[in-house]
Image (tube, rainbow over all chains, first blue to last red; front, side):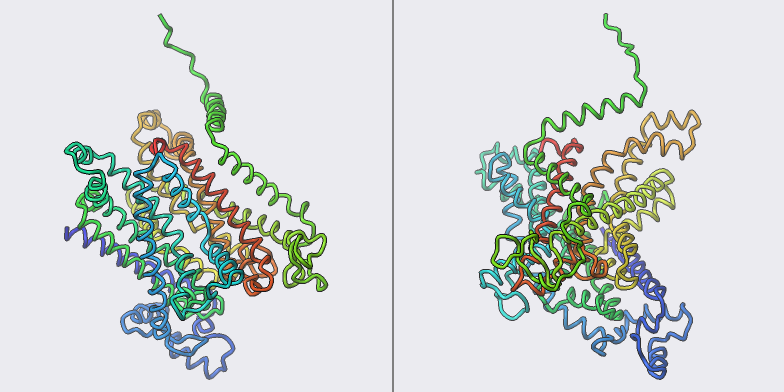
Length: 308
Length: 303
């Protein structure tokens, strides 16, 4: 067990190291590092200050060391646009992003697990195919298209919901819907498949044969076993999907979270913010995936034996 | 007694006739939804190819006199502008058609680059094993671990919104899927007797790869390719939507939606038309990809 967890953690560290290195060299290679980190149009004096501030006069090796060290002392430089430390800006943005994410994950779990279970049990009936059809639609519709259509209908046509900002609970409805649609679709499909796998197992036939009522068979014997797989999928797939989704949804709804910050930074070429923002989201996703993977290994011994 | 020693047809003719009867059989047990989707897909491809011929206007031609005209059938519509005009008086239908052309073209190119990179690396990893395998699969793991949207954001911001940057970004977006599929198939196939026979008769690794392994892994790769095109269409339109695609005034479906957002309260048709077209496009490709996968993957068939 310990060996499995350690190998996962080692792999995580290697991945993070490669990403950090990749971002460092990509940003240093693409032209002038001073313009890149300090912004263009500075006076000669300001340029000197910035070169000293970022240690750009030193060798590439030393710069790399500085870059790595910044992850430990939390000094990631200043935003061009706001002239404030990047770390402060990112910290401010985490809260709103998390609110949106937690909302989307709760909605996803509440809808997808029952829907997927139902689709597996009623696989041959119209109910099953309707659920899977809806899941297909949810998966095929791009999140920004969904968001735009929601705004057109509910904000500008019906006038029911606010089209941007994050003031009241009403503001949550459309962003959470747009963000969770793809997650619900994905998890419904996985739940259905996991349930179908479990439903064909011998121990379910045994449970039925000894006369247990059907709902007990489904909920106590089948769903419980399927849930391990389902939750690990939620953890593994959803961190990535949600990180990508957040970028789009927050931009559409002017939600002041990490995703909106990243897009603004990319559009306005605010590289210090972009560089650190991308890295922190990537590290968060990798961290979550590793933890889920280890948890899955603890919950299901077959996993750690086959993957270790 | 039945003569069991039937004449063996040459491999080429056998493959071709096998494919034809397979295609007919697949078409026959296809339901009307898939047939309709395939038809719509063909129409979309035709419109993309023929955009310069069928577009009523130059997609970038501005006209101050016909700004923000609604689609035909609404109050204030201007004859000739079927889907209305945008804030610069450009014809939305023409821009949609050119946008479709660009989106599909770029997606196809990106998917082919991904296939070339991923297929080659997967083939090398599977055949050579050892260090190559570890390195390539390590890269695959990293690519899976990091949400690609983040890498795309960074790359476009760093290297600018040119066509070749966009194509390169889309090209490396999903290479790892092809690499995994190819490697898995190679590992399975290399244990097969016919590969052993080829090795025993002195065929080089390159020959085995090209003549014996490649033809056998085409079908899973075709499925992955189809599914990927929809992912790439999605990625491209998302980047364009966010303003990180090609520079204006080039029309792409995503950028039309992105730029039109400011006019949503007064002129919703500017975003509605391209948004619905993106929806149709991803729906069609996804549907065909799913259907293709269900038909080639025997394990899924009974579901």
